[in-house]
Image 1: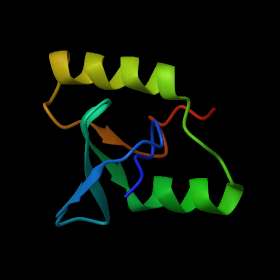
Image 2: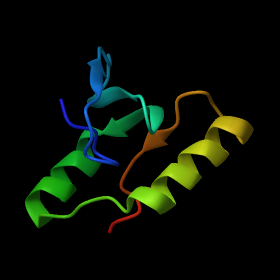
Image 3: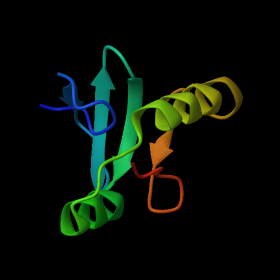
Length: 77
């Protein structure tokens, strides 16, 4: 599958929620909500790679090892 952040090759993991868990060798592990995916798909939006990678790294250091991208936290490109 394709990473939603960098569009490189990534692995989709089982999620157990409305969304997906992704493990990208370049962006690291993250989750993305179903509502964020739906808004991105409907609007044809992409995520700002550089800003989102920085946000993910910050979240991993301060909050949780697998941060969640949702409609409030996504950074569009």
